[in-house]
Length: 401
Image (spheres, rainbow, N blue to C red):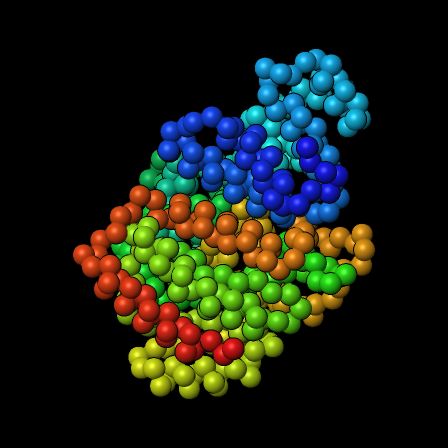
């Protein structure tokens, strides 16, 4: 039985029971269930306190009704009363848990069925074909250039006397492009991965508990420009961009090994690193350029452009439940109790929970990108040497701590 304020491990145990059961299952079924459990726990970790309290109460009651063979109508009626629901609403809650998952199904107001959306499902041919071609030829193409590509296609069809579609609204096109960037694009040869990197940070729709205060979170990402694979990520609050970068750099070596096992292959070193420098780290620019000159043929391009603008061109504005909100990183300030910034609708209890949730979504996106790629190197030792050399270059450039 769950207590009134359960720990994460207690919630995990209930979610595991609800999703995986206790019986034997095929290996692939177990793996799929474990991945779903991770998804549900990442969602739970990101819930704001008021929603988490509601989910805790509902999860406690649903857990008592876990076994349908032992469930009686009176049990459902009693649970409904404790939650202030009607009997039919309680059965609806149980169905939502079965269909969507223990956490997804218990969050008030969360849709478990998506409405048709052109931005999500596409505009149809030939507009979708034009968008795909434009993004394939230039992965970081701007929305305005995609729009011009579509306009040119429509004009060509009109000149030929062929039926021409109506151009989508700019807002719908923008959303569609970002949806496509968050999904799996056409995979480029993994041998070419890692030559051109982007290091950029972007404010998230997430607050993190720091002592007795809550502070807005910013994610920092190291991304391969050609494949848009996220090689590493960190998270920070306040003006601690150096902490976020140090976290991403420290975690890079281990994450590259995991990606190697999924088929990723690297050059010995990156050739170009584009670094969007947060204002607090501008004094480090000279140091980074000196390190690059001492390493060899590594070009570090530093810019003071808007945080997240380049990043979202590559990976989109969504990473699971996280929204990336490009803007100049503002001076951070504590959120007053009960205060909700308009752009923040997720909360994490502490930095580690926040980082775990973000990295879970990074892994999910990379898995979609890599698909069923297989390791192509004949020598694991050779791969390990490449990873060590590659990570060492990044550590020499940005591993200041």
